[in-house]
Amino acid sequence: MKLSNASKLSFGIGALGKDLCYAIISYFLMIYFTDTVGLTPLFVGNLFLVARVWDAFNDPMMGFVVDNTHTRWGKFRPWILIGTVLNAVALIFLFKKPAGMEGTSLYVYYSILYILWGMTYTIMDIPYWSMLPSLSQTKQERDSMSVIPRIFASTAWLLMGAFAIGLVDKLGGGDSAKGYASLTVIIAVIFVITSVITVVFVRDRSSFEAASGKKAEKVTLKNALHVIGANDQLKVFIGIVLAYNLVVQLAGGMAIYYFKYVAGNEGLYAIFTTAASFSEIAALFIFPIISKKLSKRQVFAIASFSPAVGLIGLVVSSFFVPSNIALAAICGVLFKLGSGLTLGATTVMLADIIDYGEVKLGTRNESIIASFQTLLVKTASAIAGWLIGVGLTIVGYVANAEQTAATIAGMKILMGVVPSVITVIAFVIYAKAYKLEGAYLEEIMDKIKHKGEKEASKE
Image (cartoon, rainbow, N blue to C red; front, side, top):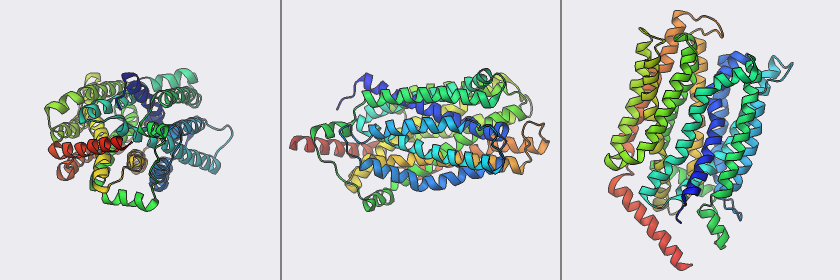
């Protein structure tokens, strides 16, 4: 199945809307809760963490449901559409401050909505990424295909980082609650439109199999648990992706606090995130090129260490020139250069691990395995939010006030030191345990190709 360029772009554009939705959550939900709604940082951090406990069960089960879905439209596209509509509605209400509600009722209201938002995001995100392996057949095609949705996703984060604060102020006329509410309606509309484009114009392997009348294999819960437990490379992937997302979510979540209170110039936030996002997009464009010239391990080394250099550089510069525009931009470039390369690498890794599981275990379970990517992104977001909430509480943060020297020092550690340590740990995990590269990977892909050819000849 050769995918046309139009289909590739239609698949990629789906990531634009869904990542606009996720970016506003990741960048601004914490500060919206603490500075606009008035919830305590400690409660918000604990809410983020508790919600992910539920996702530990919910996300793999959604993967199980998708793999057992058999419709004339395939198993992925119906869930993408359903999840998108539900998640767009949840997003709108999550950023809509209810008039007259306060105290315990307000805490309960936002707790329920945040958990619902996470559940509905799962419904859409797992089938979206599960489609990718069935859209590519060779290593070269997979390397190039994997960066297309990531480029659209990075563009979404660029737009949010560069323009969200200004749009909130303009749309709200100085009322941040009104501004956030208006912005999320716009994002929800874009989200639905881009997902519809993906659903209508992209047909994956399961869609063609359904059209041909091929009977799909039923996945039992016992088989699903076996897939999770017996795939050793999936466990490595979990460690790497969790560490990577912790770095991005922790630094990204702290950045608005850092530039507002440490640097004393909230406007630097847009410069830092814009430079970082452009760097990430550039890294995604060059990923297929450098993947041909360097080994996977060398690419991942660059991806792991450049964020540490950028974030430590930002912290060091804060002692001398905390409001320097050029340094903020350079540090942002280094931070997300590694992020872009990691996004490209881990997207390819996910597809490789699905193939590896099919060869090793004799069954292909895209959605069950892909569900871990969704779970890990949300888990990292929750842990990062919890660390920020608890960390800000420990260091004595007071919303919308001048911070003490101890609080400023704590913010620097949360922004630069902790993420830098985690990104080094990600490389250690990769170097010690990941084995799907070189001749061994080529052998796996050849087996998958020959299996497909053999099945096609029988039809």
